[in-house]
Image (cartoon, rainbow, N blue to C red; front, side, top):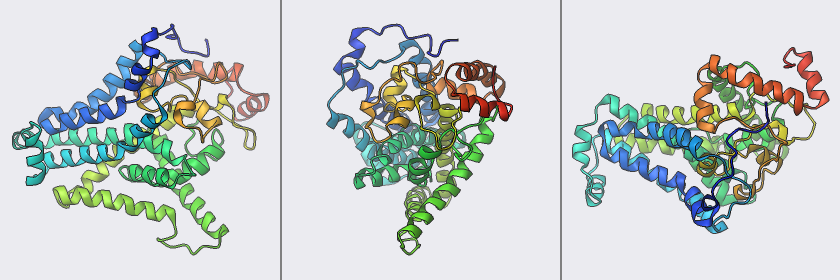
Length: 394
């Protein structure tokens, strides 16, 4: 089996143009705006976010194919702008959803009426089931958009603004500790047993979500406690970045409670859980079954790549994951293909996540890929390690 996917036919030149890539890297925010519109309509439309997540970022991207390294991109300021407006867009989307599934506020109703919506009718058409769809859709936006943008921003460790904005985005999923563990833990231990965010061979995604979530929380707390001790700084809620981050999540919870009452705590937890599950599903496919000897350099072979045009645009090149792990501080528009040095997923992120949810089918897909990695990319030490633990695919 080849190390690259099979849809690498040369894309039409117009897809590589600056205007096409301007649209491509605007897709995520256009997706949020489309989600806000469907949520404002109420009723069955509130499930549209979940549906569009799999249809647009799944089926459609398999038809469009891959992007290359010779793309003409919009200017840097525009690409940064797309990142920076994500938080206010997600906040607006959240308020619209809560205003429809809750009792509603006159101010928000009038604002929606002013742009052509009928919030009273939308509210009357929304029952418990369709309201659940709204919360699921909001959670998908938190994971697909908020966490992806946060991931880019928290790596900009020299920009205080970017790191704080990234943590506010993570507050939607109650996961601001990701900004600590991912940058200082995952990027140090990726591919080793010490990394909770690396999925092991044969591990079912649903068990991985639980193990990874708990492991990353513990790791983030340990990293921050060690940082404060190393710098001889008192450890309290004002100095501890991890616990300050939890206060950001409390602010998100308070917004929910203000809009819908005390049940907003459960609503916020539900949407946060949906977003967090999506994040961990992404973690699952990004490094599934790959191994690295602790202390050895991190190479392209330690991450699964995907080159699909739609998902690389919507997720700001997150699927060029091997390049990201080699050059973590690079902005997303400077990441490039690994040119055969990294294993490549046979489909885009969303289809692969969908497949991982059904373990028998996931095994059918992943086993040949792991065998290929073992035979063609693994180092001698990594092959020996896999043989020693009985996981080498020969």
